[in-house]
Image 1: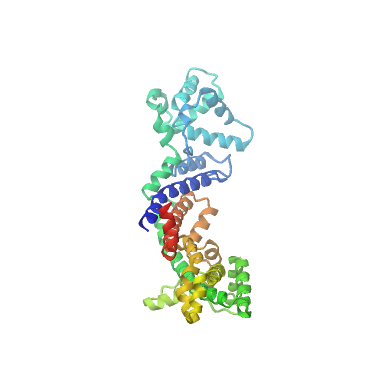
Image 2: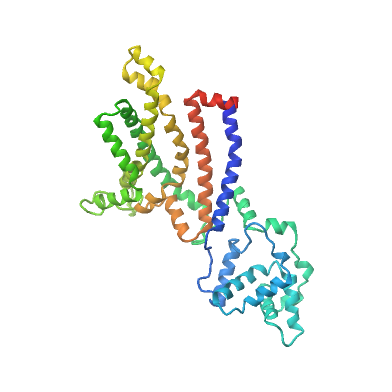
Length: 426
């Protein structure tokens, strides 16, 4: 057992690194970025504000490799010429690219810009180079720049002055930066909403397991009977119904007054500031969570009960179960002592999704019911292209998924000795 757990522990860091690498690539290849200019011909003040915004959050840096210090003069002149392009979109993109290139290509820009100082008929490229340097170093300051002092061609710039390096520095320091939207720190924002998602997820999953296991065992023991057929039909209906549909139906029927108004329609607790005891606060939270928990439980219960039924039905055909019945043991004893342990292995494998579900909550359910958890936080961040929040939530969910998988593997190994012994020999 120790070797089995040690093997799983050694695989966790590699799995986490690969998961985070995939997340980084997907988020950076997604269309659109925070700080994009909707109007490429925006006023200079707005462009400067957006430039400062992108610098603050590292959005002006290349993704993986920073080759900007090695930009040659022909490529630089082609970029400077695009600043005068007739199409506003191309002009705006070239202007932003030039602003991001300026700190790294100072020697090349100086060579082009100083041509304007010795010529009365300076080219448009030279004028744009002067403007870029003046914006970065000040109108009089760019003339005294030493090209050698600003030559940033080094391995450190190539590899470390990138979003990729910045991302890993933040992950190792557990610092996901600040939200692009409200400038608040990301990690405290996630932790503040975590308790809401944990309460919603924990209550729903525990309730689903408490109902699914007895129903699955009963259905397997009474296979083919009317009640088993009814439970099977109900499970497939719940499994097929999307969570947003079930949630909307419950909202309309029990919260919107069509026909009843029994529960709150949204939120985690009442917004009034009336002093309450701990018991009163818990009752208020519970009242708000009745419909979200019912929706969450319905989705999980349908799958769990089918897995439990399938696992128990397979074990019921085993030789040792027939032997137990032949000894004259009561059916309840056989089911609990000889069937349930092995029959629950398929259900235990689903524990891998328990921890990430507690951490991230259910995005659909939190959006439908307006529950201010991590899922709703992630949904809003995706809509607003809040890169830091999305990355912070997904990093934590990835780590929770890996830990949940480890706990699931250990639980299965404890329930079935063949698993850990087979792994140990391998």
